[in-house]
Image (cartoon, rainbow, N blue to C red; front, top):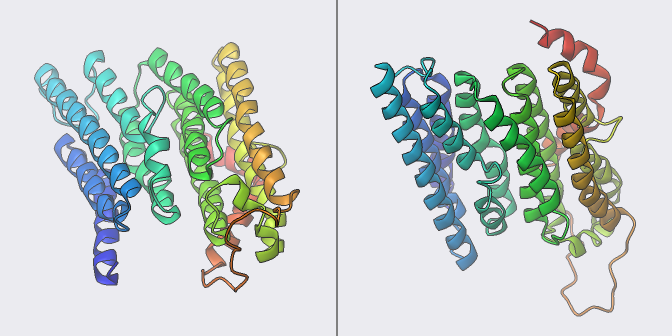
Length: 348
């Protein structure tokens, strides 16, 4: 892609998210989401592969459905309340429609069907944008309206953690596994949204850091399925040794950074007398941990069979800049000791 066009699209992508962040009027927020959707679609279809075009079309139809539902909910809210302001959401019907529209936008279960299929059709760079940056604007709106529909949010959260863990068990494609991982993490964020929005924000930032590391590792290894991970030890031995730590951090295993948000969320749910919800969420985390362990085993403890018919990966040095990956790996693996400081900062 022409670098000027790429720069324009990335700038527009940032502009759409910034408009949604800064808006207090529903039409501006909706416009920012639409700019976001339109800016990423050329990036998704840039290689003109049938799978990429199919993924782009699926993404467009899903986002258009969510945007129209969102517009309908905001119009209904203005009709019932006489207000277009984001903070004035009081009637339960528009709040429910609004929550479901945003759940469809970010891929929460049971509105998640599009996410693994779309992510599988994209290259890893665009998949990284879809899994990280595209979650920010809808979450900004969810945090602003502070939805009071507790039952709906808990159902969405538990369903997402369960399907995110269960769906990834039999996958061999890394992008689909990362899509189900994204669904499970979003479920954890939604579970605690109504009780502690700051904790949701912390979980979102931790998820962004861990997912950024994982996508960059797979991009550096040029791996798109589990079998391809077994060749990475010849290309980057040090990175191969560190990657299981990144994956286990995604799974929420102590003493890595990913344990911190899960720990704090379970603590908060228990404080709110939701011990059963906390127990179910912790059990569903074990499902996700299984496929992270499977990826770790495939990458660090197996060797690629040389007698298979297939192209040997090039043993040349990668031209990818590794400094961002270094920083994100440090954040992914070593932030747990800062938990007391973070809890003190989050305290009201």
